[in-house]
Structure formats: structure tokens, C-alpha cells
Image 1 (spheres, rainbow, N blue to C red):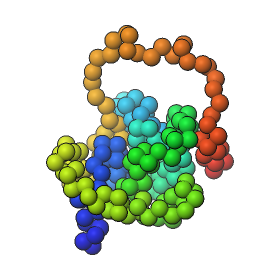
Image 2: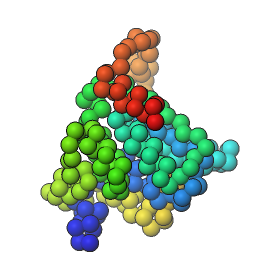
Image 3: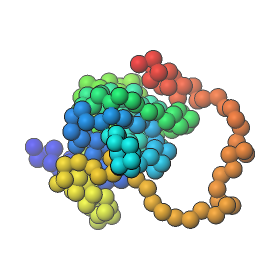
Length: 212
């Protein structure tokens, strides 16, 4: 119990994107009409609260920034454990990274560090790394030195505490901020090729997801 408490409240990363994942497990079972899997395109571009207010359906963004395709199947299975959504929308930008993106440790940990231990989680870790990495099951092994996070990430910690006290997330996985972008800073999509090959590793994970 002491180790579990230290892992949950002291020796861990505190990350706004991890809050999205962690808060999903606070949702009441079988209450979502729609689930969304993807990355920042959903996190900052789709508002579940507004969708409910205007159209009456309940939804959740399971879509932390830079969410890699290597985790999409794991995330879908996690959603299906507690929810039975009528529709699952998938934004496939996570399949457009290179091999480093598919196995990027910070992005993997945003999801795996804060999800419950399960056969699904163990199988996913083994599938990605070819062996068991217990630090993804027990993050205290990774963050045993990181008590300084409390001083650095007070805002995120307070958000965690609010969700725990409330018992659910108000934003349902939406995170955004405001700012100004000048025309010169915006991407001109015409400068990018219309077609490009997928990284072979990302393509493998994509087809595994589609086959499921």
C-alpha cells in the first residue's frame, strides 16, 4: 500500500496529457456514445462538452499529444473494458511518425505510466519492446528521484486532485490554450507532398490496428 501511494502521489510524472488518460478511468461505465483515439488534432480540435451541449451525445478524447500508432490498439481495448461506444473515431496522424515516434519513450509513458496493470498492458509492453520492461508497470522504478516535480508542476497536480475529488473530468479529454499566430508562422500545406510512404514500423502497427 505504501509503495502504491508513493507511486501514485509522489514518484511520478505530472503531465497535462497524462491527466487526459488518467481521467478516462473516472468515467462511469457504459456512459459514452462516442470515443475518439488520436493525438493533438482531437485534443485541441474537438470539444466533448460542446458536442453534448449542442447535439446531446457523450464523448471522450482518448488522445494525448503525439499519441503513437503503437498504442492505438491498446487504447481501443482499454476503452472497450468499461465503455461500449456506438462510434470510435480514429485520427491516424500517429501513424505518420517515423520509427522513433512509434517507440518514443516520453509519448509511450504519457499513456502507459498512468493506466491500470492488466494483461492488455503487459502484452502491449512486450509487443513494443520484445521483452518485459517493468518500469512501465511500476513507474516508481523510473521516477524514484523526481519529488522535485511537486515544485515544478503545481498546476497539473492541482488538476489531478480536482478530478479525484470530483470523480470525473469536466473537459473529457480536451486541452487547449489561446494565442496569436501570424501568417508567416503558419504552415503552408501546399509545400508538403500529397503522398509519402509510411514508416514500415508505423505501417505494421496501423495494419494490426485495422485487422483488429
